[in-house]
Image (cartoon, rainbow, N blue to C red; front, side, top):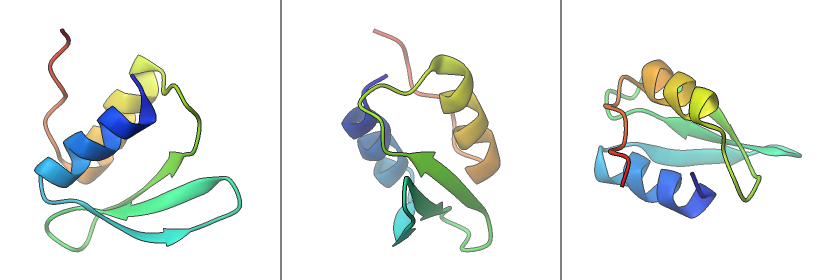
Length: 64
């Protein structure tokens, strides 16, 4: 999945970007408690997408 599509999906479910590291962005879930690190690569693998969504308690994106 492309990074911009993942970011769009996270925002659509109430997550927001809260910080930047050297190679990752920090995202906080809609509840304000859960945090996940999202790498800044052009493509994010399906296993990592599942893990990020699980950490933020966001449903998985639909595959087209």
